Amino acid sequence: MHADSTPPSIAVITVDGPSGSGKGTISQALAGELGWHHLDSGSLYRLLAYAALQESLDLTDEAALTALAERLSHDYRLPTQDNPVIELYGKDVSDALRTEGCADAASRVAALPAVRAALLAWQRHYRQSPGLVADGRDMGTVVFPDAVLKLYLTARPDVRAERRYKQLINKGFQADLASLIKEVEARDARDSGRKASPLKPAATALVVDNSDLGEAETLQQVLDAAHAVL
Ligand code: C5P
Image 1 (tube, rainbow, N blue to C red):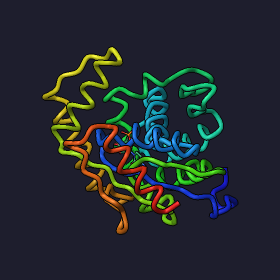
Image 2 (image 1 turned 90 degrees about the vertical axis):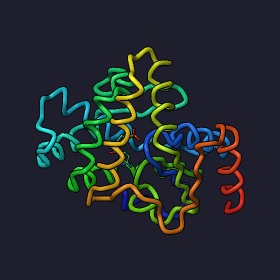
Image 3 (image 1 turned 180 degrees about the vertical axis):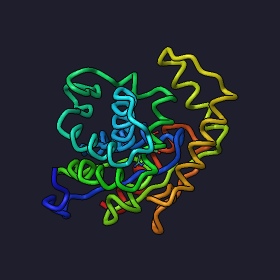
């Protein structure tokens, strides 16, 4: 997985934004419409956090986490069309990665600069022909600064917490809306306030606030923006 050997001519569209902004659903749908690959970069941070928790690592131990990232880079699989699950050491960990505990741990390890640097090559490896839609927090600002289109999806915190609530309930997890609002706000503050690659729109990003938009309307706006540059 070497970023620097990847030809920069392969187009990338980046979709950044806070949790619950719909960036996962929209970027997956956009990739489907374009016939491109999709990278959910948050799942890499979640994978690392999950593995760190399994190994009882200190979530502030930058050296141990970076070494773990190095080892994991050979032992995980992201979803493909044939196998739509996330695997670690050959085991399906998709549901374990979606819990709020894992999200919280992911946001802690993601604040460490050496960890972010270790994950750069993993992420750039997914830049494959015919194109990539990459979603996360710093796709447009740091990982793919030459993206052909940079989108930033957002919504009001209460709307985002309610979306997370519905997602968790639909997956059979227990959830409490009031605590979710607090957790979403704490994670937003940590992701936006950190020194290393903070969550913020890229200078040229098209910002879409979809608090009052349905999924289809958001997708249409994003598709229009993509067709305008492709
Ligand atoms: O997007 P998702 O909620 O799965 O991301 C989990 C956490 O991983 C985020 O709260 C954020 O701290 C971190 N992350 C990041 N940079 C990315 C993607 C995710 O810092 N590109």
